[in-house]
Amino acid sequence: MNAFTFERLSRPTEAASAVAARPGAMFLAGGTTLVDLMKVDVLTPDTVVDVRHLGLSSIDVSDRAITVGAAVTNSQLAWHPAVRDRFPVLSQAILSGATTQIRNMATVAGNILQRTRCSYFRDVHASCNRRQPGSGCDALDGFNRGHAVLGVSDHCIATHPSDMCVAMAVLDAEVHTVRADGTTRSIPFGEFHKAPGDTPHVEVALAHGELITHVVIPHLAAARRSHYLKVRDRASYEFALASAAVVLDLDGDTIRDARLGLGGVATKPWRAVEAEQILMGHKATDDAFRDAAEIALAGAVARDHNHFKIELAKRTIVRAFATARDANL
Ligand SMILES: Cc1cc2nc3c(=O)[nH]c(=O)nc-3n(C[C@H](O)[C@H](O)[C@H](O)COP(=O)(O)OP(=O)(O)OC[C@H]3O[C@@H](n4cnc5c(N)ncnc54)[C@H](O)[C@@H]3O)c2cc1C
Image 1 (cartoon, protein in one colour):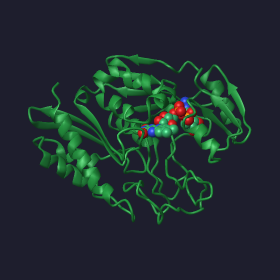
Image 2 (cartoon, rainbow, N blue to C red):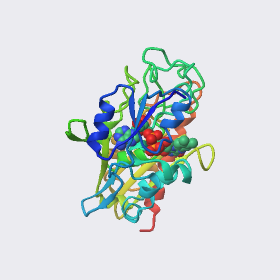
Image 3 (tube, rainbow, N blue to C red):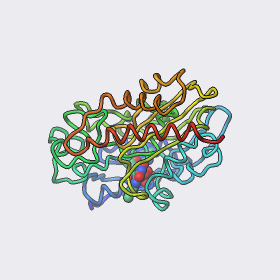
Image 4 (cartoon, rainbow, N blue to C red):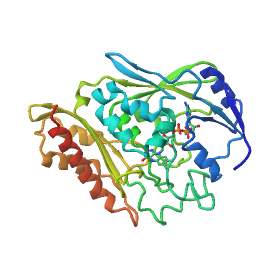
């Protein structure tokens, strides 16, 4: 691991200025992604700026929204009574990730900005356009069983690994930031992460030194009937092969509104909008959910080892919607 300078500041704009001033500086939150990647030389910051003492650790609940500070831990958010009550899908998504110990360290902003688990990205001896633009992609014809089938390009098929982000995508969360000059902005969740296209190294909508301050999750009455289903190789401490975050708004047995997000199968937290639309006005049957699943995966492109993910994702969608439908509220 390279030597680096550690800085701790007390105001968000000070932290943003400290990182913006140095091309080699990065923010450090819980360190569960960053320090891991520093140990294997994938990330080599010369300075890390601690963001856990900037007054960004509160969860504020109002009738209109839940506002979550960037440094709130994944555990605090998942177990918050208002989150468990209003947004079961978010609580379930977070609790399906990693381990208790990691969730106690990991923060909301860090989770949003976690990097792919693609083994070629994490191996500095492999070719990876995301890590080193223009170097190629060893995953395309390599061992790609865990890789994405949605949002892929000829330059990158790395899966976005977050569970929490899939739930935030269906809840239409907004990411709020501050820059070194004190200007702030709000980025809709769907615009925050970028599909790889020709520029896989451009992963998110942030500028260097732009600090996430908080995330706003708008109130959505229908989200009480929501569910996160994660399918993986083992029951704990494992990333998704396929996951579905669903919200179902029912009028009797008719679907008034539906939301669907996918994880484990896409290059960014995935929102299947066309699949959502086809459900509206239909009876909430398994057949209708299967029709939506077919649409959600219609654009899937598989490689040698990940064909199975397409059918797996469809079945995950059907089961997630059926579970939400059958919930006794
Ligand atoms: C063994 C293991 C298993 C895991 N399993 C899962 C899983 O199943 N599901 C899942 O979703 N996740 C999983 N994770 C990922 C974990 O959730 C993330 O590592 C964690 O959420 C990152 O948060 P952090 O606070 O530790 O971020 P850090 O590692 O501190 O930072 C991550 C990135 O975010 C940036 N950053 C942090 N805060 C800010 C801010 N306020 N503004 C701007 N940039 C910021 C940092 O510069 C860095 O680039 C796993 C991790 C490990 C190590």
